[in-house]
Image (cartoon, rainbow, N blue to C red):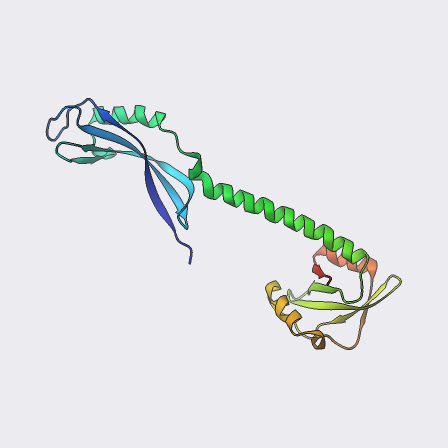
Length: 202
């Protein structure tokens, strides 16, 4: 379950010299600038805007921005410009950017590794295959003779790439006895087209 919502944090507070509109006390009203922000799992994701609130220390009256008298609103506009949004309010966005960068880098490194393994396949290598029907299965290298790679297709398929681990868990008996010959250039083409989504070598 994803926990998300809005929260608020007081950025700054100052005491106004104006009289409280409720009790008339002088220099008793505190004006606060409040930063609203969206959060996911309580991590600040991005700011949503600022607002203001006042409270009289004498009569305890609380006023939201829309209910403030004009002098209070004018003071808020000046104070708001001075209250900067903390950088950590963008933590969620920063985390997403970092995760995306890591995933991109990791994907590129995997692609390079797969390309190296495909050009020099070895007996026992497992090719993770995406079929034309958008199913997933496995090919196991049985023998390499020159430019020809003999693979044993798995007898099972799965609808999700994550299900390939279950096929691997079935062991060697889940692969067909008969082999399928594939040329090394054809394997490289399959990798480039996305028909081979992974290569595993133990």
